[in-house]
Structure formats: C-alpha cells, structure tokens
Length: 120
Image (cartoon, rainbow, N blue to C red; front, side, top):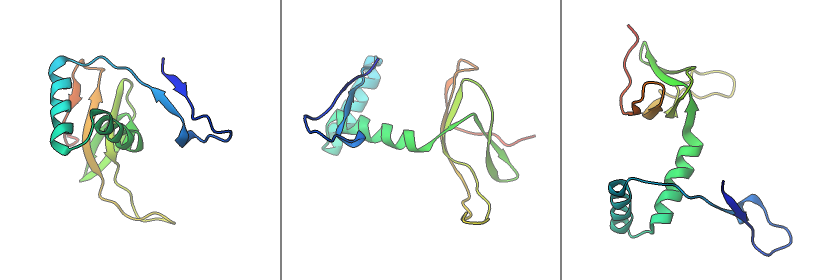
C-alpha cells in the first residue's frame, strides 16, 4: 500500500501530494534502469516518474488487435496495452492512425508482448 504525504500548506492539491511507491525488481532490471538514468543525467526516481506518467496517460484495457490496418482494443482480462487505438474523423475527433508500443498480457503467462499480429 502506498503511503501518502502532503506539503504542510493549507490548500494542497493532488499535484502537491506525493505517494511512496515501493516495488521489487530483478537486480538486472534495476541496474539497467539506474544506468539509463545516469546516462541521461537524471535520477532513477525521475526516470521512473516519467515512465509511469507516460504509462498512466497511455494505458488501454484489453488486448491490441490489428484489423485492416487499424489498431483496435479487444476486451481481454489480465491484459493492458500502451499506445493509442486508431480514431476515425468525427465530430470533434481528429483521425489518428494509432500507435502500439507494447502490451502486458498475464493471461498467457507471457507478461510482455512487443508485437501485435493481424487478424486472420
């Protein structure tokens, strides 16, 4: 469970509050992340914060599926993917070709999928 602390100000907003988040990593993953942060001239905390902010803004529930060149999100339990589904022009909607970055699929004990196949 994450601990929350806030600044001592009277009117603290969500952006002023911090949560302590602990996670166990394999030693090699920790080493590679620490090296990447160092090479980028940032702290490990800054790297993780940036990655998680991006992930939180781009996570989609389900499994990504390619259909006639369009990226769709297919409902699936124990699966999330990161990117954007294809959007079609409509009222207030700009066309976007879609983007698939990667998926986490725990239903097949695979965990990480870096590709997406076309529908048969």
